[in-house]
Image (cartoon, rainbow, N blue to C red):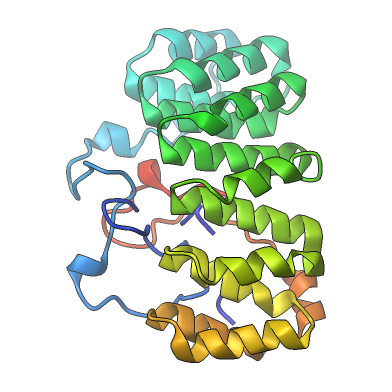
Length: 284
């Protein structure tokens, strides 16, 4: 059965299909779009081919992997937008980040003018860990940019899924599908079968991407009501992707599905033309 993201774009209601999972495949993987009009990029205002080569390489931290931590901090604070993006990611990979790194990333995640820098900074907070990182991620759950908010949900899930379960419930009411989708995945990973109610509600979501994932995760609910919901969605949903996903979910063994489910999105995969690494879907 096809299975984030980060997932899952952005000029339309929904974003591009998530990178492949096995269980790293989008629930609707293998359903071809009808044409270019169905392919969406990840941020409003981003046009295919518009990014510079330097911007497209901003998520490649190899050029700075040997840079001292102090130099990365300087680049994060004073570099151009590409240098700041790269430094934000690289600092999440340092072996002993410490409080200074966490505090700087948390500050940048809240204040940088570039939304990608903010998103990459909050992503790295999830790798740095600790109370400072947690406070920083909580602070940006109200960011104006939906992809920063969606990444904050991922970071809170990574840092302490159970402790932030109520914040995930709040995020189900966010006005952007990526935030709702990530929160839904976190709640399923935390609650398991007890997530049935939120998944059942989510199959009515206005976003095709959220409905797709809700149907996918209902495969892990062992009960007549969940099966009946899937049978209805497999027939009645307006989206081919969602109907196919619901039909596939009916073929799954719920216990095996729960054991194998990770909901993880590849950070390396751009799934469709126009979805660059820079504008990838959030990783959960």
